[in-house]
Image (tube, rainbow, N blue to C red; front, side, top):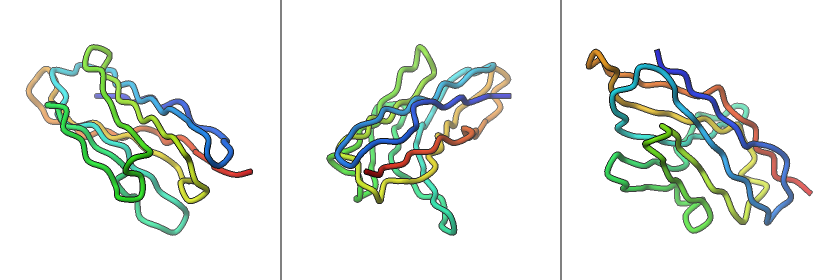
Length: 120
């Protein structure tokens, strides 16, 4: 089993910044992709940013130039630096990590979610 623990959400004013973290623990052999998704009530979960094992990144158009995803493979942690936050960034943010366990079994795990609220 792989557990993901998220942190860093909260209330911030428009134009402010937050940094989310998501740490994975368990019998992890390797991590392939890491990503951040967000969801608002009544809407589907959408990809915000993703990063591959090689460091390639992709972003939703709505966050390009404002958000930066990064990873620390020693700590099995993925980060999301969010700058110039807008009220429309308000959502529950979830991390997702995919990889392999020690027994060569694939895993696809989700964090518990962290609320980000952008409001004055």
